Amino acid sequence: MDHVLALRCLLCGTEHRPDEVAYVCPAHGDDGVLDVVYDYDLLRRRTTREAVADGSGMWRFRSLLPVEPTTPVPPILVGDTPLIDAPRLAATAGVARVWVKDEGRQPTASLKDRASAMAVAKAAERGIGTITTASTGNAAAALAGMCAAAAVRAVIFVPASAPPAKIAQLHAFGAAVVLVDGTYDEAVALSMTAARLRGWYNRNTGFNPYMTEGKKTAVYEVCEELAWDVPDVIAVGVGDGCIIGGLHKGLRDLLALGWIDRMPRLLGVQATGSAYLADAWRFDEDVTTKPAIVADTVADSIAAGLPRDRVKAMAAVRDTGGAFVTVSDEEILAAIPAVARGCGVFGEPAAAASWAGVLAAVEQGFVGGADSVVIMSTGSGLKDVAAASRGATAAGITAVHARADGRDLDDALDQLEMR
Ligand SMILES: *Cc1c(COP(=O)(O)O)cnc(C)c1O
Ligand SMILES: [Zn+2]
Picture: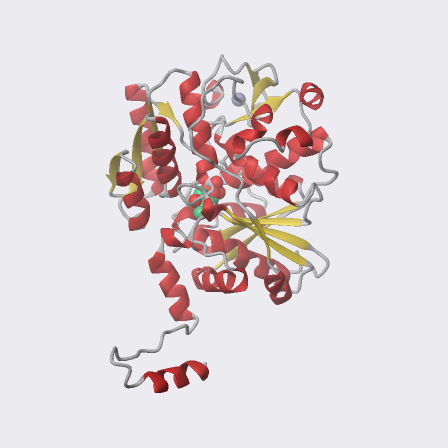
């Protein structure tokens, strides 16, 4: 890994050698989140935009990732998800362009596969055969899936209240599952303790510095799909802040390499009931001291009382001239059918939240008519069909009924026509 210069602490700036520390800066307990520092001069000589076009999936970008050239990765395609042009959504919002990055098409149906594939690779480098994480559901499903592909053991801590589809995925993939009668934040604490007690590899978001690095490959693909001509705004639902931090990191990499020539504004979208970062941004609060809140939203994937990657998330918005916006659960639920009908991408609540956030940002004047916008649809709508049904019902979307013998078919069709 001669291209990785150091792991730099986001709190004190100390640079550690990657073989010196596994997860965090020892000076601040679990809060000393690290950022991977690359030798961009070396990378510029070593790789090109053309070179990374070769092959398939996120590991095409291996030269820009913190792994050894020979590290085994899960033998399953992660990444290369489509970026879908959505002119009807653009017209609805009154902006120049909208594209939707459909991460629901990942193997376990969320963007989290990128991070979990990275976790499996890093665990292999350290020769550790069991990986643990806490999760609101998707990181867990992703870790379980990537571990199944690589024949590694996964031990998962999730709130018992996670959507059934996500828990079903864990069982199907053969993970060892601990259902926690509590919140995501409480599940994190248990998983951290378990990792220490048993010496397991710890994938926990924010704590593990490499998860951002896996997630950044999503924005490499976005820029590549737009022929390296970046959009003005990238919108994403934010819980822990690891994804938005990863998008920021990927964009910083591409700028440093000279592969893109400007930085998009990052729009972080939070639920009104889980607005730790949006509040910190609005009121200029210090996230290293701001206490946890109680998170409550229908968008389980962005429910986080104490966002684990809060430092990276704040930097992502501040340093790109971006913004945080909040959206209500009603707006999130309404966004599910709106995006699905508007371009054919069916997202879970946290995924559709990005679209609700764009509408809010247009209203607040943060996004304007000349802007081109990418929304990150971070997970599939099949993850939470109950929420999708609620969104459809609230939008007045209903079916008509027809008798099996066809006697009232004509009436039923008339009713359809009247919609
Ligand atoms: C995890 C997740 C998010 C939020 O990512 P953070 O890194 O927690 O901010 C958004 N959408 C989906 C579908 C997710 O699984
Ligand atoms: Zn430090």
